[in-house]
Length: 183
Image 1 (spheres, rainbow, N blue to C red):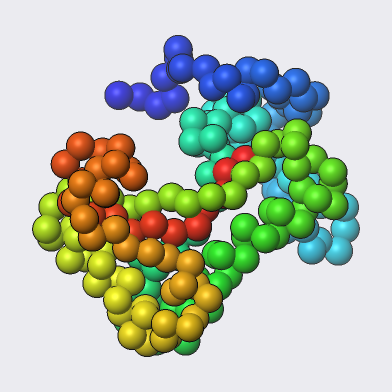
Image 2: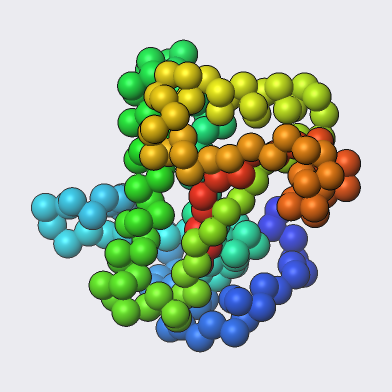
C-alpha cells in the first residue's frame, strides 16, 4: 500500500470546516532552509508539509485526539529516567489537556473546535496484555502513591463483563481508564 491513498474517506468534521488554510500553499517550491521554533530571533519561516490539506492527515482521521500517556509508558520511562523523570514526562503530557483548554478559552474558539474532555481506555484482550497494562499502573501507584493526582485520575475495570460494556469491545477482559481530550 502506498500512502496517502488517492481516495481517502472524508472526515465530516474536516469537510464541514471552512478555513483559508485549507489547501493553502504559499509557494510552488519548498525552501531550502526553514525555522521550526516559535522562539526565533527573526520572523520565523515555517514550512508545513501536509499530505492533503491542513488537519487532513493523522489529526483529521483521529478527530484531534489529546491522549497523554498517563500510565502506560511509566515502566519504560522509569528504566530510562527513574521514577521522578518518568513522572515529569507524564505530568508534561497531562499538561497538554489544560494547555489546550486555556488556549481555546483565550482565543474564544472552544466551541468552534469542539474541545471536549473525558475518558479513554486501554483494553486488554489477552491475559498477557492485562498483566502489562495493570502492571504499568501498579508500578506507578507503588512509586508515586495513591494520593498522586495522576494515579487518582486512572481507574481499573477488572470485571470482563463491565470491561466489554464500557469499551464496547467483545472479548475485552479488563481495561485501564484514564483522562483524554478531543478537538
